[in-house]
Length: 268
Image 1: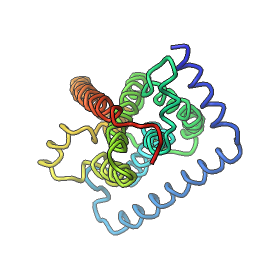
Image 2: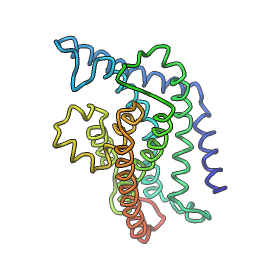
Image 3: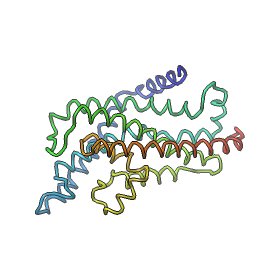
Image 4: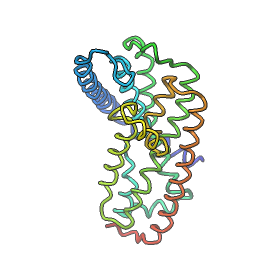
């Protein structure tokens, strides 16, 4: 654990080496995304008579997207997960095999080190957001929902890592796995509630999606935070997440064991 802590702190210092660039890029990306969301949905709601879509008022929809964008950053982290495939391609994996620790554990510690500055940004935003955001009355963020949401987001972060890991380990056999990472990002955004709230999907499709891992990346943590789910629903969701964590972890380990036997260390 001492080695993992050192890796974590080293990545944290590296991530914050260019502080102004880090804060400016993050701020402008967030403002651009929220501007698109606000003007798009304001135009849609302007043409409605009832004022709601699938139970969402305009303010509720904006709040949902705000939280999806922020929680999505926590779940995906710095999106440097292609580093594993790059290590396989360029032969950089060889040096990690000399370390007295697990390579995959090492990379996840790096991933968490890249994540902490993002968490700090979101924490600061959460402090000032109540002064600018009028939370709809149907949402109830309490200390209990906040604490539960933090636990769920932590599981979702690990889930995303394990979803991307087998795709990257295909690099032992394929020359390029970048398209697989793009596919995961798109499918996760579509079926996870980033592009549209899952409440807008047909009921039958939603029931199927709840058995997939994608719902629990973004939509589920947001609903937990907003107090829209009961404890039984939260427990059921966490159980499904645990199931997928075990399955994906086992698949990744199997691919790793087989792929590492083919690794020559010379790169591609």
